[in-house]
Figure (cartoon, rainbow, N blue to C red):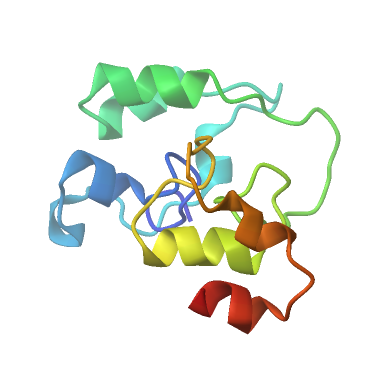
Length: 121
């Protein structure tokens, strides 16, 4: 869904725009409603529902696949899109795992231990 999925900034659009679902003109719109048959963003429709030009620019910068591929679930907190316990741990500590951290204890992740013990350490 256009409004509820976390497809931009790893948050939903109402979260980013600080809007409540009651304030949305078409709350159950799908993402495909904002894409033209030529596989381009329909900026006219987007500007009608999103008041923020910065967010519109971010949406416009997202490439739309030219082939018909199925949607898939990916973990947005790791550059590979794959869930890892390390990235979940960073999330639990409210730290951005995509940003390289200068952390003195990186050696813990290189130990040949069970992940739960690494997390405990």
